[in-house]
Image 1: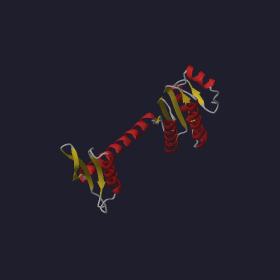
Image 2: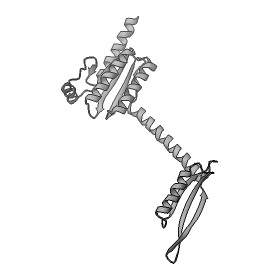
Image 3: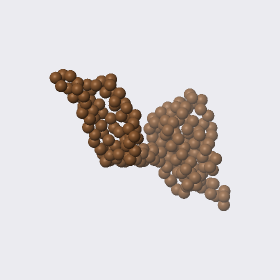
Image 4: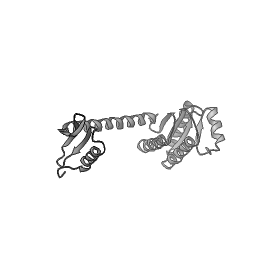
Length: 212
C-alpha cells in the first residue's frame, strides 16, 4: 500500500472480497508516480469450493490519460457550443454607429436574462450607441420575469447614456403586461421593428443636431 496514492481503493476491494468472496472484484489503483493500475480479483474454485483468488494487474495509464484528454476536449467543445448558442440567442446588430438592435426569440429564462443584459450593456459601451432596440416579436411568452428584464435593460442602458425602444408588442402581449400591472412608462414602445428603427434613427439624428 505504500506505493498507492489511493489506498482506499484497494482496501474497498479487499472488503468487497470479504463480503462477497465468490464475486469478481475490480478496482482502479493510482500510484504515487502517477501510474494507474487496473486490478482484478477472480475467484477460483475446486470441486465447487472456493480455494482463493487469482489477481491480475494491468497498467492503463496511457488509456486513462487518453480518456481524460478526450473528456476535456469534449467539455471544451460543449463550452464553445454553449457560448456560440448564447451569442446567437442574444445577437446585437448595429444599424449605424448610433443605433443597435437586439432581436429576442424563444423563451427567456433567468440565465438568458443575464445574457441579454450583459450583451446589451457591453454592446452599448463598445459601440457608444444612443438607442438600443429590443424586438420581442419572436418571444414565445411574456411574464413578470420577461417584463422585469426589459425594465432592467432600459434602466441600465439609460445609465450608460442610451435609450431603449421596445418593439414587436402584439395585442396579446400588451394585455399581458397590463394584467401584470408592470409599469412600462420608462420604456418607449413601437408596434413593429420598422417603426422602432425609424424612431431610433430620428432620435439619434436629433441628439446629434442638439450637440452641434
